[in-house]
Amino acid sequence: IMDDYQRQGFGKTLMAYWENEMKSLKYTCLLSSTRVDEDAKFFYKAIGYDKCGVLNAPNQPAELLLCKNINIKICNLDF
Image (cartoon, rainbow, N blue to C red; front, side, top):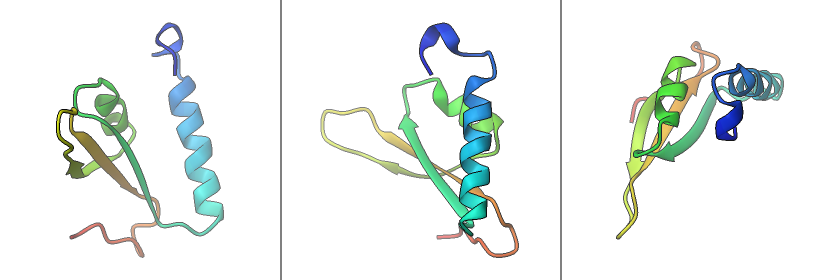
């Protein structure tokens, strides 16, 4: 979401739509990512995503992997 449109509920609405689509397709876990130096990590945490990994590349900010169970009875994020 572009800076001028953040904190107006657009991101939350888009993510809820996507999550519902994934549920309808029988997915049980969702994965997203953001750079560790971006504020998006706080957005993902606020909508129920948990840190599940980090990707490191030379001369790049680390990429934070975020996971969310959308069917707790089936999905297991333990590694």
